[in-house]
Image 1 (cartoon, helix red, strand yellow):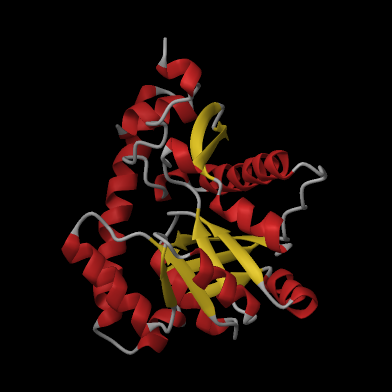
Image 2 (tube, rainbow, N blue to C red):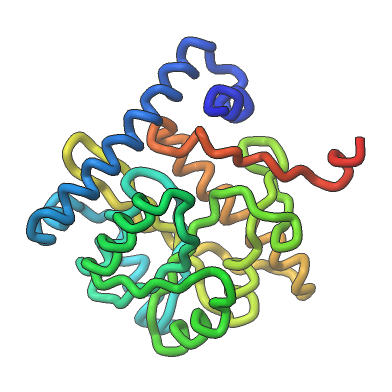
Length: 251
């Protein structure tokens, strides 16, 4: 699966290089879980000391002018440490989550999230809670890099191929007027670097449905750009293009 996905994303890359990236992606995932276990077993400040920021002024500007923000991110770098890093910004954070398929890994992730003081919102039926959290002046983080069921998605380009992508973040942004701030983390040796980008430009159309598609495209383009910088730190083993557009499914 990883090699097939890499061939879609990087068709001009040699087979040996794609295998190298795929292998390092698995190594990165293993290291991520080792880091999570180590973080749970020592003072939290040690983990935070290994995190640096770039572009924090973008988030501060949004919070100063709008009082709330939707954070766009992905399963890139050590994304669990990214959630923990909110303590360095001074802003309260809630993240929309889906329980992991592996119960032990899900328990490990939840322990770390609660230790860091992050509010967890179950994506199943969590709309009212998200709206209340935004109204309270908090940041809400949503990952948008996984395959979504057709009933809750729109198809937008991801590395040149239509990908079924959750429209939840764009719907929230369009309906509430909340800015979307892309934030990603990457591993740099033994340290972790967080990059906070300027808020995405709001859609320039009056039709709500078209606005949701346009904003979802911008979100996905931001994720693609972040992955392209450190492709070995993304989950290439995930079947990102599993759900296909109706016109392909009927062929």
